[in-house]
Image 1 (tube, rainbow, N blue to C red):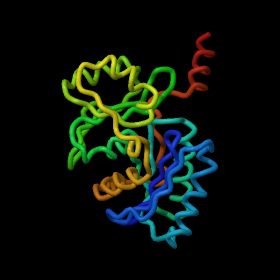
Image 2: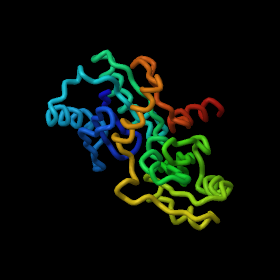
Image 3: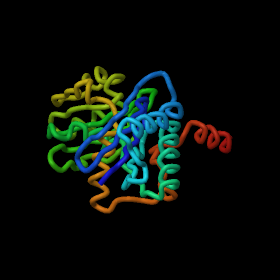
Length: 233
């Protein structure tokens, strides 16, 4: 099964091509450009480098949220456009699960942290191993709330994601269980992880049409909050 993976939920833009369990190509960048400037050129470059015929794809796996509103919308639009044009199914891969999946081989508890700004993160807790399982469902939480959830596990926890860069020291002061952070080379989001998890989902029949796909934001946008406040006033 040949899967194109797309990751754009945070600052990192990433595209990967996976055939069965073989990672054929991956293009990842975290630089001062918007995902609208990077995703399609990345796909075009991979297509060129490995002589990819897009019609041979079996599915397109896309990081489905939570994350940046703009990033998710760009990734979703890219995946939906390809899916509609190529008549290929999409695989909605939860962003936090894909992030934790990068460290699943290490076993133990894994806590993905995505920086949601202003002292908040998108987070969850998973147990790694051959089959990764959810311990705490995805949520939008303050660092204090996350620390309480980690303490409730009573176990050592590995944290991963761009929220680690912003909040690790603050979190470490609040937890009373062993806390460690993923090494920098696997800490951030990756389309290879999205594609690999997408392969598992596809084998389980968890696909959707391009028209069905919609990102999971976990919270309303600032514009929506301001509109709601204006209606109340």
